[in-house]
Length: 375
Ligand code: HEM
Image 1 (cartoon, rainbow, N blue to C red):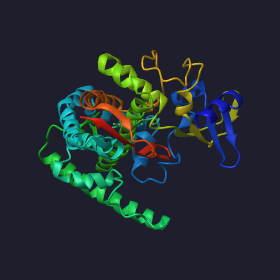
Image 2 (cartoon, rainbow, N blue to C red):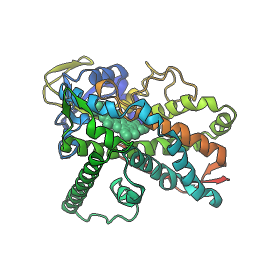
Image 3 (cartoon, rainbow, N blue to C red):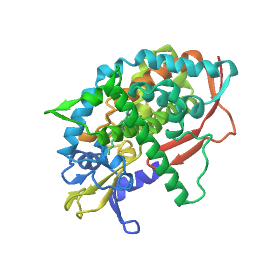
Image 4 (cartoon, helix red, strand yellow):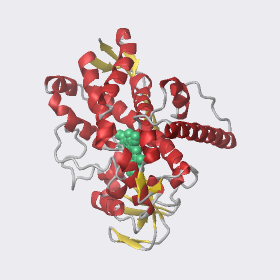
């Protein structure tokens, strides 16, 4: 895919695919313009959300002014303080997961750490009780223990049932927290207020589901991608052990190099000029942040992994008004877990001849990454 991006950036940086009727945007400046201009590039009624009853009403699928109201309300609860407050618990969760695999000398990074870690953290953040962790695991798209749908109709039906269960679950939890608030996100969301206006039950519940969806697969892949880079370029492991201060820029480089989210959708609200082309009103636009991240105009030697790259203004968390709310949390999780892994596991190697399983969609997913190590 990265070769395709390179070819497209130089030949057709803004490209109309006549078969799918989708416009593609590849270059850094064009991607930036699309993401900075919600008036022309709308987030409402785009594919991905429009068929999803819950995400439709959430911040990610709203334009101003509705977006601003929702985002401000959410920001009241999702503060840097609320996130930093979590760091002790995040450390504990990381250690519990590591303790389970340490004695064995091997693990599947994806299944054993990268998947359960962010799910537990979000459950903690929201204030979901630990005993409900199993329900959560299913919703978060756990790979194991799921019945596989046999037809698209059955898949729809399963999804529908799951959404109803999620809705009922969060509505009940919300009600409980309204009666007796705790120090968690659900409690603070339920009382957040702007100009006397609060989030409706529907908005609140949808937002909880959005957090679960947006914060889970993405962060899972940040962790898995980092471990992929540490085994692909093993010299990184020693350098980071010797100089832990390099971890921050290394994480940013993992984010740039292998972004968990490769593109976002927009819909043009009116005719708009981009990269010398006119995109007609009501077109679906695929904005390739993964391609922008490799644009040589912005990133010298873009295909080289440079753990000290600075500046590193990648678009992995998006840009503009929809910039990822969870970015501080995702960074916190990586900054806590990855140093612990390097400290406690020596000589980390990928298991030779076992393929890494990858599933590419909106989120690029490493499904399996087996490694060996010495505790
Ligand atoms: C928005 C990526 C982690 C919650 C976004 C967007 C991207 C993104 C690209 C912009 C979407 C757009 O412009 O349409 C990521 C990546 C993550 C991550 C790569 C991990 C490495 C999280 C976490 C949470 C979260 C941990 C919450 C716990 C959200 C929310 C939005 C969002 C609520 C919508 C913001 C808005 O529309 O104003 N994320 N995300 N994300 N993200 Fe994340």
